[in-house]
Length: 480
Picture 1: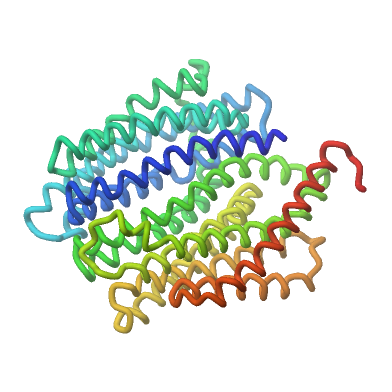
Picture 2: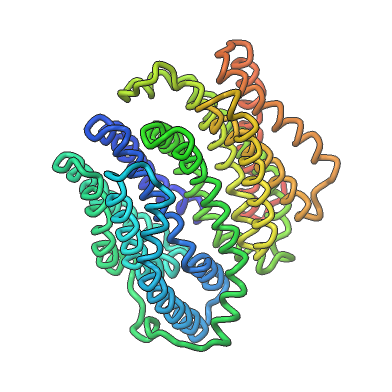
């Protein structure tokens, strides 16, 4: 019951923020143009990479706190993290000039854009630094599973975040000013987070500089950081490849469609956020939670069915969704469909990914992410001369299909009691349904659409029944 309440509280807030995010994309493009949106996407990419500076510390802190109730040890975790963050901040400030030059050379779209990209580097570093205290409060809140407090903070933060962005779009022509307003909300975030999610005792904020403790924490987080770096690269590499091969305006076109279909992650990110501390607790004492662990493959099938239906109906609505944009291209439906299918596959795999991270299997997540990135690269350059601009959509879809199937296979092998003969039927079911989705997306064939519904809807009903049965067992202890 607590798990469902946590999901509901976070979902409501994310749906509201998601709607605002969808509105933001056409408003930005119609007022500032695709080139400006391309520059904005560079900022989004750089900000995502800024999180790598912490070497996975925040995620690992959440995992440690979720399985630790002793206040003395919790305080020690916070103090060590505060010391590490202090070092990270100093290093970022020292490296900022070099980072600015690196970005201006990498994103070399012309002399008139170089100063904009230099400012993007400065603002990205500033945003990361200003967000560190808030991330520590979030780690504490999430580890304690106080998702109602987290939801309230996310809701308020999203409101003034988008308010500042819309004000920037309407008042200014330069995207740097929009980004500057967006960065300023990080200062507001800490005040709001402290009031809503709760603060920490002053002693928790005191940095402790102990090399031995740093080594221990960083060694635990280093592989996770590498895995996060690859995950960020998987999501961001499309922007880099499109920008390099087709220019900043095409980058704006690609990124606007990608940002639109990636709203599907509002579902998977919330589920992962709530599931991560729950998985950490379950896997901390696996022998006491065998029933729950053994049911996870069933829920993976439920997840796959749900996301395939999202892809199916999303493709049906594509012409109406794309109609709100003022795109110069006459047909972006194929790119939309390919990116959407890739996103739903990534969203599904997120559940397996969170399970592995919660169990501390960082090396497996690293190898999994490396596999996905390698396939994305190979697919893109193989298809580039045949599919042109849409090659990024094909590469994204192919890499995410293999990524999702392998991630599920790893989880099934992790669960020793899972019957091995079920692996092949599950694999066939997943491959068949996603191929039907791809075929329907590109051809709008009515027969494939009917087959998708006939296969997936009964599965959803069946897995929902199993979910209710499991919930009844947990509440009553009655196996019947």
